[in-house]
Image (cartoon, rainbow, N blue to C red; front, top):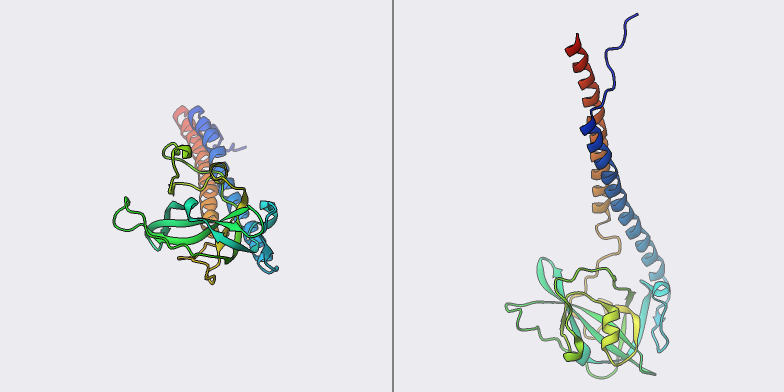
Length: 248
């Protein structure tokens, strides 16, 4: 009876390398796939809540998760003294800021931050762009969003007790709430593009933006895991054949 000369005889180092790399590649693929699923779920929530009637933002604190991406309206007066410019915002390849201004809601002391849109940096970063703030009572309409609490700071944030900071690297809503002398809603209103309440460039990204990119990355990582496994099996078998030939 003729024996099969092809045998699976893996070497130690390739086996260890495969055991180390394979879980990493699969985990990276799962991570990207999970991000795509999260964005898809957010988009579905956005689409569902967009169809509902606008919620009135008043003096009582909102549940941020319950109203996320809901259409909202609020009436009050802007308070420019506590306005901030959110840095590192890019529009059509141009660097700029998002202008966030607190709105003092009518009927109490509650406030809500309103993202009024994007403005360019300009030629000199030491000179901040001029941002007009409407006077008197305005009606703000838009969408409630909850800023991410995950961000990377290049430098330690300034101690706001020594003076107000106009430019922020990230929107740390907890830090902002602790720094201002008034209660604040735990959401930010993204001003509707059609609103006349003192807005700038407002081309807000969809929640599912770049979802296909995440799916593409997931396929790449899964593909690399498959290639690694095939390479390991093929080289292990080939080495076993070569070993048999060497002993012949």
